[in-house]
Length: 214
Ligand SMILES: O=C(NCCNC(=O)c1cc(-c2ccc(F)cc2)cc(O)c1O)c1cc(O)ncn1
Ligand SMILES: [Mg+2]
Image (cartoon, rainbow, N blue to C red; front, side):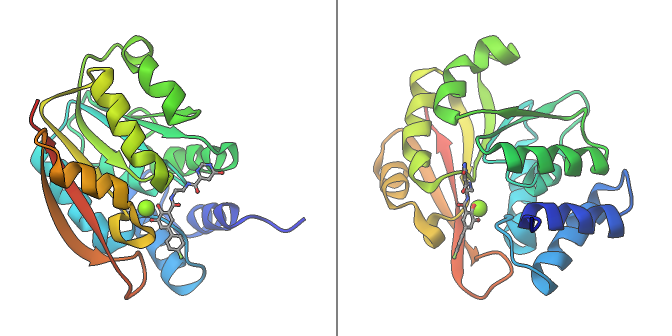
């Protein structure tokens, strides 16, 4: 049977990228998605904004919702200070299987903990599973209708503290209208929109950065 797009993306990484070199894995994926097959990675343009926020926050505890092929997990983990880990949750086992191999190829497997499962089930178990109290940084890039319920869950589970940073992908395309309305109108968040484009296209998209005020 025909291979899947994530499998073809993995093949390109194994063929073209330098093993153990996260930047070459990132560049290979961006080249493949621009010149061979589009795929829903955050991409290079929004990726540069993600990089700058990760560097600014320099998180001790970081969570990603929606691993897909592991592109943004590699982007984030390559910038984390030594001794810190990124926890990334992926619901789709086929995506998770490819992501594990791309993460391993990049050499960042010791800085990334990929957990398969539904975010709604895993978030309430985060403290016990990972021995963490609160999260310094959360990157939201999973199902767009899960952004709002999941940050409400993060609040309820007391995983956010004064100053925790949420960064959400695709707030324009495909769009997360209920999430945007909430973080922009809630007194518990200070929100800022970073205008950009849908990965590898000229379509408008952007990232929403929200600080939890406690
Ligand atoms: O689809 C699952 N996750 C990806 C979430 N991400 C997206 O849907 C996403 C989509 C787009 C996008 C934008 C324009 C367009 F025309 C088509 C797609 C871009 C992005 O940057 C994303 O992040 C999924 C499946 C499954 O079976 N189980 C658990 N999760
Ligand atoms: Mg996305």
